[in-house]
Length: 148
Length: 89
Image (cartoon, chains in turn yellow, orange):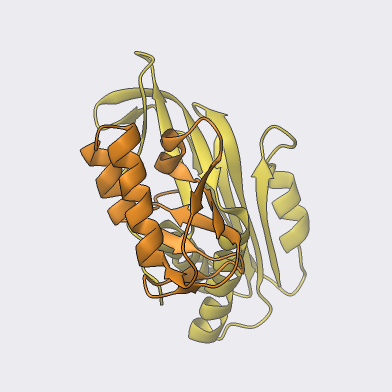
């Protein structure tokens, strides 16, 4: 069971309570919440916020593919996965991504959650423009996507 | 044939709008579109090296939301997304 969504911060908030509601199940004994936030320092530059850009349709497609691959790879039963990523400007300390995973056992939840975030980093078309305290800003260099 | 190139990530610096428009010949490919974008950079940004590298390292996305190769034939007027190297999450 998967919930995948891009949150436009100009229209709504990303909230962990939504993840809690989605993954709640008496069939699962372990829940993991991964929360990504805007950090204050990158490459010795003081960061005050990040603007996230997203190709929404491709991002959702990548979340669905990653979830299906993980299901096939791990073959765990009764999994619930909640993935939301923001687009727009996010201030220092605020949330950019939530990945919540509920499984029968803790080892499964850790494994599934880790797989999802690592694959998102490699494959989901999301871009970051960092804004610094000295008022400069720059798009971060990333990894090229290859056609299949 | 008019192509609307949707801009994402660092390629948004190419325009104040969130897209660029190009006229391509019939049976053009992504390779041809990439050349036209590089010409656009040459003419509008004095051949800015960083922008050219960005175009060369970008992938492209069809209207059907598929990442397509340089050989992909553009057979109709459509929106194509430029997908610069990614690094979100």
